[in-house]
Every structure is written in structure tokens, then in C-alpha cells.
Length: 321
Length: 281
Image (cartoon, rainbow over all chains, first blue to last red; front, side):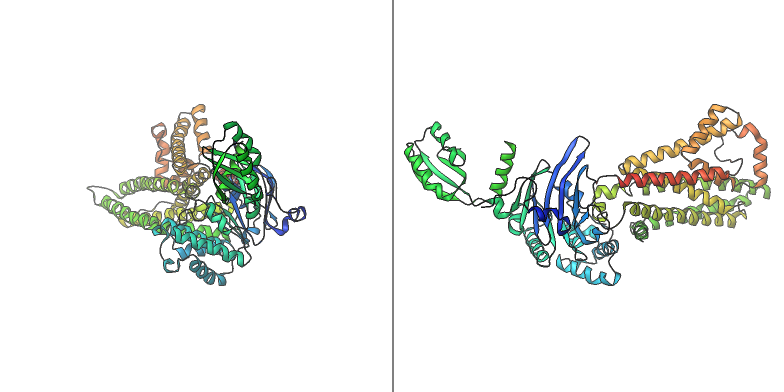
């Protein structure tokens, strides 16, 4: 079984070394604001045409990482490449789409005009604008509000517009920073569909989110960051692992003997219920026999499928320990 | 030409936010009222044409001072938030990852605001002078040069506010620019007093303030071209009696001072570009 990488990148060395073939590659990328370390050595890789989830608790450095990738902030140390070019490269930005976490567009403009401005700034041929704008408006469900001023839009509609702006010109890499933070369940569903469509047409998507269910549903690979560095990276299966968890209801087991069971897995003691994480399923009968041998009376054994949330919290806890 | 795109958007924003229509409306009201006031001068009892000309020339300078004040305050209020509020609101976060240099965004804003300042100075100034001419038959000796200096004063203050806008909140940058503007004005008065009483210390303070903040220097450049030659010589003859008069200029600006102002503008623009380029967003 391939374990998730807890350091650097999970790609093979040849692949990771070839930054040109990757959508994103960073090597010890760091950012410091005065004395505050926002990012303390980020090393990760995103393949082309994959949906990459970037997870982490608040203040982990997720938005800082995205800002470094799109050139909004300058790194203090380390290196990074986006679509094969050093981060900040002007020409490469033609092939990027970006939805900021703090999304705001000119309120005095119509939605169509905002998209037109971004077509112009991205250097797109004028003959393409009309088609691209119509496509973007249609994709994000704003076709009927195209000629309304943005200042009249709800927050969710502005986020949809931002997504439309990010998708203009068929970018090769789209960076979405919390793209559903202002959306209702329908909007969230729509965004997941858009991400799947982007992947189908070969666009790499860098999804910065703390909505674990969202990441679980759409991402091919992901990285978990904490305190400005990657603490785990890999495919969803690698991150979740095939080891599950098991809950056992047991009585008559002394505290000392309970502690001795820690060799079977990460133990959470909730009185009558004991939860073992990271336990291979074929070791469950052995564990139950051991509990009985120690004088415990077993009333229930419940295997538990580990969710991304379980694994995420566990990773953060391990990091904290 | 992304600089032109940003300049166009800057002007369009001023138009859509009704700044242009508000300024145009207020200017028309002010011009109509002042022109009516000027037209009353020749109708006053026992007034001679020479007296009308004297009064019209001095009142023209006062009206020009009002317009230059409006222009200075307006330039600051429009430029101080130009970069800062785009950063605060998040608009800049969507624009800057596009294939556009930060210097192009900054220079586009400067160009757009510069055009607005010039348009206002030229438009309102010419309209006002036309109204004065209709009312009194008086025209200052070189209205175009005077208006060019008034516009330059606005551009200087706008550039200063734009530089502050790359680092400071709109309110802070605006307040600092305005304080410097008024300090420069007082510095100009100090220079005039220092010159009349030949006091080296006060003169140096005045010269220093005029070099650091060239708005008052440019204002005096404008005044000179609004003063008829006979009034200029009469004022010169008054000697110490005119000490500290902020509405009098003894001589035109030297070419060296004009070159200094151009260099000052270039340095501030370089600083603004450097500051914006290095700012983490």
C-alpha cells in the first residue's frame, strides 16, 4: 500500500524534477510578513489536467500560497513554477484563471463589461470576446443578468461572476480560492460540475478550500497544509489510507489494560466505547480476542469508514503532538 | 496598450460615478454667478474703466484661487483612494494576476486622472474667463499659461496622493496630501515675507517648502500670467506693503524651477511604481 507522503511531493523524482510538465511546482516556497511566518517552506506539485485540493485550517497559509502563485505577493525564499515558467511571469498569466478569496468587481460596471475588461487585459483577440463572454456567463448562470450593474448583485452572484472571470479564455490552470464560500447548495453543486468540466477539457484546477466534502468529491490529489507547510500529500486514497477505524463497546476493562491496547492503533477512550484508528481490518478479530483475554466484555464491534474530515483532524492532531 | 485601458476605465469610472456631471454642473453655476457679479462692476457709481480693470484683474486672481483650491482638493480626493481602495476592496486582486504590469496599472491611473485634472482646469478656467470677459471686457495677459500652471498644480497634488495611495489607506493618504498642500501654501507666504524683509532664514524655509511641495510655486506661476503689466509695476512699487500677499507674483517661474517640478514629478512617479511593485497584496 502506498502511504501518503508527509513531506515534499508524492510525485516520482523524474516527474517532480520536470517543472515544465507540471501545472504548479514549488520548492521550499516561503513567505514572511515582518515577524509572522505565513508560509514556511511549501513544496508541492500539481499535474496538468488534474483537480488538486489544497486543505488546511484557518491561518495555515493557503491563501498566501495562492497569492504567491499568481504574483500578488513576492516570496521571501524558495522557488515556484506555474505552467513551466517562474511564478509571476507575465506571459504565463495569459494562461491562468484566478478567483480570489476576497472577490470584488467594479460595481459601476455591468457584468458583461467586467468580463470584457478582463478579456482586454488578458490580451485576448477582440474577435473572441463576444463568444468567450457569452460562454462564461452561460457557464456560471448569469446570462440573464449580463447587462445589470454588478453593484446590484448578491454576494453569491458576484462570486459566480468571479468564477466566470477566472474561466475566460480557456485557461490551462485555474486557481480557485474558496470558490463556494458565498454560494447556496445549488451554487456549490454548479461549481463542482464546472470543476469536473474543466478537468474533462484538460484544465488543471487548484482548489483552495476548507470544505472537506467539496474537496473529497472533486479532487484527484490533495495536499494538507498546516503552519505554512505541507503535512501530507497524495491521492485521496493515499491520504485516507485503507486502514479504517473500529469502535468497540466494552465493559470490565481496567484502565491500565486499556492503555496497553494502544499497540493496535490510535486509541480514543470514551468510557464504554473505544475507537481504534489506523487499524487494519484483518486485525479486528485479534483485537477483540485480546480484550476478552484481558477480562473485557465486548457488546458491539462497529467498523468505521474514515472520512476526509476524520483524517484531516487526525493529521492536524499528529502535527500538534 | 494596457496603460490606455486602465486610463479609459479610470475616466469611465469618474463619469459613471457622476463625478464629471457633478463638477460640470457646479462649474456652470459658479461661472454664471461670478460672471453676473463681474458684469455689475462697470455699472457701479462713478467707476472708471481703469478701476474696473483693476478690480476685475484682482477678482480674477481670487476666482482662479478658488478654482485651483477646488482642483487641488478634488485631485487629492480622487487620487488618494485610486490604488488603495482597489486593494482594500479586492478589485486589484482580480486585475493584477492578468498579464499586466503593476506599473501599467499605476501609469494608467495617473494618465486617466491627469486627463481629468487637465480637462477640469482647462474647461472650467476658460469658461470662467469667458464669463469675466463678457461681463467686464477684461482678459488677463496670458490665460493659457495661467491655466496650464493651475492644471500642473492639480497634477502635482494628484501624483503625490497617488504615491501615498500605493501604501496608505485612502483617508490617511488624502489627509497627508492636503496637509502638505496647505503647508506648501504657508511656506509660499513665508518666502514672500522673507524676500521683502530680506530675511535669509525665512527665505530658506520658504524656498525649501516650495521645492518639496511645488504646488504653491506653480500657483504663483499662474498668478503672474493673470496680472496686467501696469498692476504688476504698481504692486512692485508698493514694496513692503505687499509683504506676504499670497495673491501676488513678482516674476514668472524660472525655467530651472519648471525643470525641478518636472523632475519632482518623475521622481514621485518612479517612487510610486517602485512602492506599488513591491507591495504584497
